[in-house]
Image 1 (cartoon, each protein chain N blue to C red):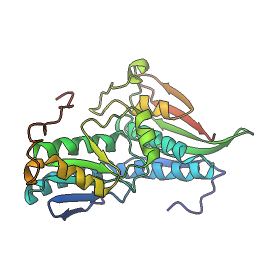
Image 2 (cartoon, each protein chain N blue to C red):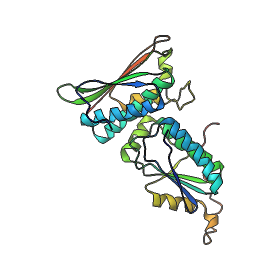
Image 3 (spheres, rainbow over the protein chains, first blue to last red):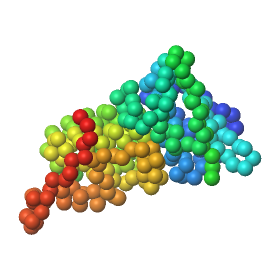
Image 4 (cartoon, rainbow over the protein chains, first blue to last red):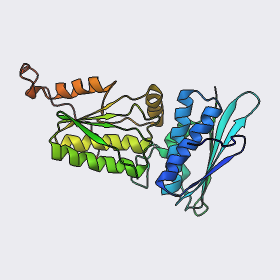
Length: 139
Length: 140
């Protein structure tokens, strides 16, 4: 499906629809396989990406994602940046609480995704959109 | 939008999810299954997720909802074929899949469904007082 892409370059994908969320999963899977993540770690990072891509679509009103292969000299990994210019998150501690939702979901997307990755950084605030950076390293 | 096919095998509906479902496809499956349960009078639903390489919170919630809907429509739902990596990830994500019965494969799933309706098998009357499982539904 995603053959012939140059994985040494960051891969960008718009998130505007349901189908784009599926494309994000497939893109992250391709990069995670190339970075030699174990099957469990591939599954975790793809699941986290699916949650965050859906948040970008549902809460951020759409946005974009960038997936990059990382290499810190010792390990390879996958870094994914989700960005939207939606309303932002006013109370981040609350948003990161298991079970809290404003959208009628299960309230596990943000908190669950954070547990599934090695590094999780979020830059947000009321009225200034949301930018989430996650990294998963090969073991 | 893709649509997930629903097969009728005897008294059971079998759904084998072979595509990476968009959220709309998942919601459509939920509706299609409810209609098929009623139109066929099936008493069991087996959802085979062998081909799914992830189950996120949306699909997890869909599976729980399908189980609840079928229960109301007098059918048992069993989810079969979950990959080990998917199970590990689900637990870490914090998804408990409340009220969902699982089995390792389709064959065991069919046994579970048969066992859940002892009143229809002629030989075992002794269990008919214990067929009600504890309700795990947490909120309305």
